[in-house]
Image (cartoon, rainbow, N blue to C red):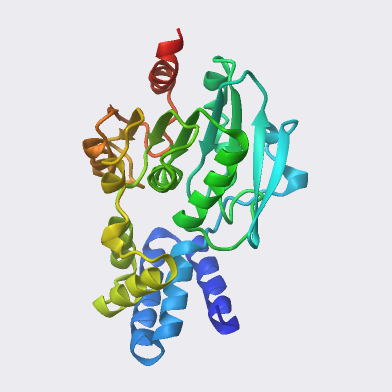
Length: 301
């Protein structure tokens, strides 16, 4: 990204974060109009700016000296992958291992309410910081890179179970599509989006981007990730899965539509779907965790 584009992006972030809802709406639409204008006069800059706004998280970073209490006194390990590094946190237990994969603008501390339920099983639990989140490196988040991080962690720890929330759940689904023959024997997916095209359509609508920008963005994904928007679909990936899965989604989720979870479950033959209500996107609930534990350990009880 150019220095001028980066500076503009930073200014936009400050504006959007600090404004009230009505003014925020106007600001976003103004940004969209500017990007639409650039799409005709400087299309490369338009793509850089629109992709940066889509892929660079504004929150979720952690400082080593100011870790949340839940992540202190854990065994930690830093992995290096190409030009990146990523962080893991380990709560030691028995030989059964569970890998936790958080979502957008979050970090491994999001599992604070989940941990006590999982620890009752005696399992060893490993949490992973996503690209550009927590203590992991980078400014950009994308699911293909997250899937690579997940795979490095899977190769190292050989987990039996993987649990993903939100876009972290989508990354788990994509990882299973890319690497079907791993140590993972069960998956739990909470509040996850299915289709990239749905996310892009929501983003385009939020900024009122024109059809030219939609095409420019899709070309950017094709060049960098070698897939079109329609190709990246959790429901398509899940149709290939043989391992057992549990998908849960809340009917009042305002971040990821309830229908997205149903899409994934509809094509995952060896899965069960749990519909929750009034949990929102966070999906923290004792009854839900009880069902997750039953799913994960019913054969061992």
